[in-house]
Length: 142
Image 1 (cartoon, one colour):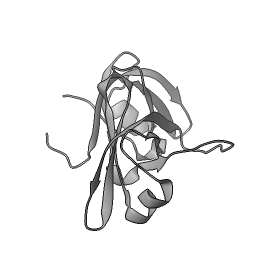
Image 2 (cartoon, rainbow, N blue to C red):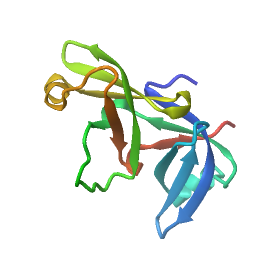
Image 3 (cartoon, rainbow, N blue to C red):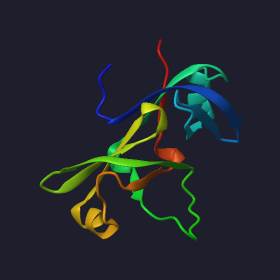
């Protein structure tokens, strides 16, 4: 399968919390990072999600925000993956930010030039990729 989502992660379902309508699914990546996804119970059942099962987590780069300093801030986004800026690719409209995580994983974010400048982004600098659980799409091999 080919898909346009820049962020594609193979992982293992490490927890499932079933609610009235949605299920919160924790996915552990090979490097130990955790991604939280929120899917409908119907989707969780259709995918036959089980703790210990293999799953693919997909996040569009445009759904990823970049944070450089969270001092004194609490946010509602469940996914905050800390790393180091590996590269900044300047496009005509946006900047693609690649954040290297521990364990060899990377996260790509697409943000505006203005945001990149305001954050003072530079290669080698610390950054956190932030995205909501609702923006994570889960898939399984059939």
